[in-house]
Image (cartoon, rainbow, N blue to C red; front, top):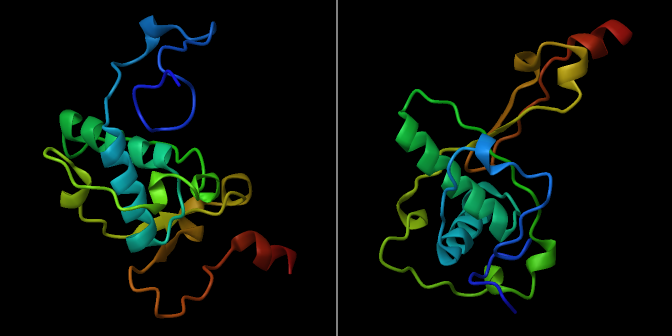
Length: 150
């Protein structure tokens, strides 16, 4: 098939014409098996149904953050969900190989901001934290805009 990896998406070596490599930071490599393990871990421990590319992005972001120092803020994107991976290695038994990063990562929790908060109020007022055990009910945070508009 041409790919030297099992992460679905754009094929190895494909560079879109609008991509200017001179303005990008160096490429961060993540093993496809490790990306699969990380996506599985994100689903099992945080309930995030993401695909293998998201597992790769997460591991790449951690590598960048480690290189930049603990105070660095690194942002990544989870580009897809897990639905199109139902018949792939994501839902199989992935072996842990020497050098795998995912098994040693401790996931502490997940936070999300409502998308609308960026347009109508102070995002910190809408912060929602999901506990790892997902057993307690959390009331929705106060929203100044909803209160104003009744």
